[in-house]
Image (cartoon, rainbow, N blue to C red):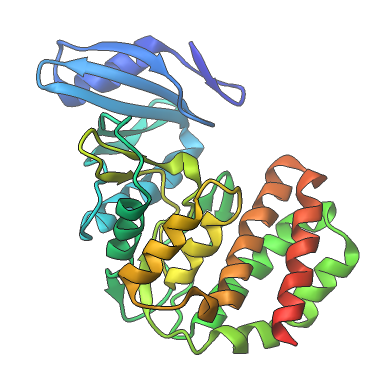
Length: 294
């Protein structure tokens, strides 16, 4: 039996779900899956990946499925096909194509993959329903102004969620200077499809070196959103950023403020989920953003 929080998910229940979609001849074994119960299901036509959680996470899995299906429109990378998303009794589940990862890491291929993803565009910023960053729910409006989306639909709600674990002066900084932050980001007018949570654990490489993306927190945002997130934990090397600049034909310094805000958002979410151990990172980012505004 595997657990998400205090919710048990038994192998027999995963077997029932697998048989519902794949037929009777399946075998199931538990695998690593982050915060959710995760399983590898083998059947005559191949393997699939299933993650499961409490029924209350059904919308979370649906939003992830929507994101993966939208991401399939891009080029230069792979995403797992969505087989099914739904609920079975008290369990929500997401069933995906199994990707064989472990291929050679390639910063240039990864940068080209992100550039290909960001070429998928839209005429508005936002998303058509709630999304989740880790376990933190994000509500979305449709916006024509990126500054409004980034600050009012992402930054300030995450400040509200995390405020109990933050220094008072950092909460006040983000709230008091919100209008300046909106204005500083509003010139970025291209709504790109973003992964939304592209830390190093949410991508891998296929045997042929093709980058593969999974576990998205999708949005129509600006490409700088993903770039800011990639800087959060030091898992992307300098060669990635140089290759991304070449692939996208731009200078990342032009995205300094929105990228720093995006980096602050992921740190705020970590304060909400894991406590004040990330407070110093938020404080450092607030100082950097203040300097960029001056």
